[in-house]
Image 1 (cartoon, rainbow, N blue to C red):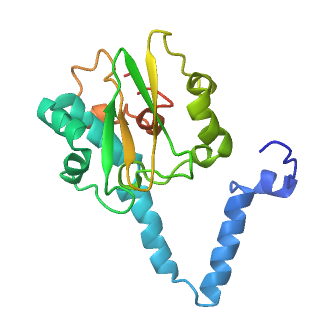
Image 2 (image 1 turned 60 degrees about the vertical axis):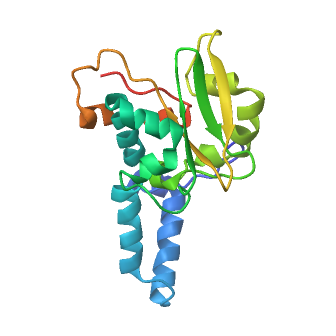
Length: 206
C-alpha cells in the first residue's frame, strides 16, 4: 500500500509469515485461549476454503464447458443450475451468470459497491478485487486496468464490464487456448486461472 513504509526486519529475516498473518495468528490464539472460538472448527473452515471451495471449482466448470457443448450451452443459459449440477453451490453462489469470451468480446467482472464475488466457484476474493482503485477504474478505464494486469487486447475487441451485486454473481468463461485438443478436462482445468475467470487475465498456455 502506498505510503506504508513500516517494516520489521526480524520478521523479514526469520519468518515466512507476513505481518498481517502474524497478527491474525496472534488474534486466533487469544480468542482460542479465551474460549471464543474452537480451533478444530477453524481448521475445518480453512480446509474447506483450501480444498473444497475456490478457483479450482470454477476451473473445472470452465474445463467442462470447453469439452462438453451441451454443458456449455446450459452454463450460458442457466449458470446457477449448470454449476450446481457439479456440486458447487452455497452462499454467494445462489444466482450465477456465465459470460463467454470470444474473439470479439472480452468480459471483466467488478463489484463497484463492495466485493460481491462467487465464493463456490472462485473462493474468497483477492485483495485487489476489493480495493477502491480497482472498483472505480474497472468501469471508467477497463483497458487501463487490464493493462495493469499485463493484458493487452486488440482495439477491435469489445470489453464488457459486469457489475456484481448481492443478487447476481458472474463467472467469465475464457476462450480455450489453442493447441489443447489433446488435453482432457483435468488437464484443461490446470490452465484456467482465477484471474481468467474474473476477466483480468487469460488461461495459461499448455
